[in-house]
Length: 175
Image (cartoon, rainbow, N blue to C red; front, side, top):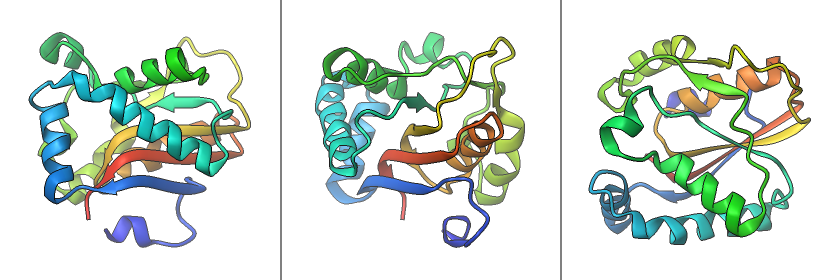
């Protein structure tokens, strides 16, 4: 929690988690992510779109947090990418997959707070083939925010590449 409460150190202009990761919502997230109940994806994407509309960000390009290498091969799908695809196809949201990459194959959920904060810098980067420009405003999309280290590192990269405003949007926030 401490890393989310530090003032003046964040590259994120705002973070918008939709739900707390507890009680029945934790069970819902577990069923979706860990048990692979993909039929929940359209509902979750609808919740994200509703939040984007309420925030006035539905016309802002979306940048999904990239999956760890091997995740799709191992699990058969990436939850954040599935949400981004639904938002793109059903709601017309512009999705920018060409900017960020994840270099490391380790699972963040297996790391403690300090390890996550230290590891995020070595895990995410701009794609080597990225030669375009980053839009002035972007929404960074992830499924669950725990320490905020992933969002922070990705936001920092996006700003270093030219974004002026980076907003974080997540389905769940671990309290």
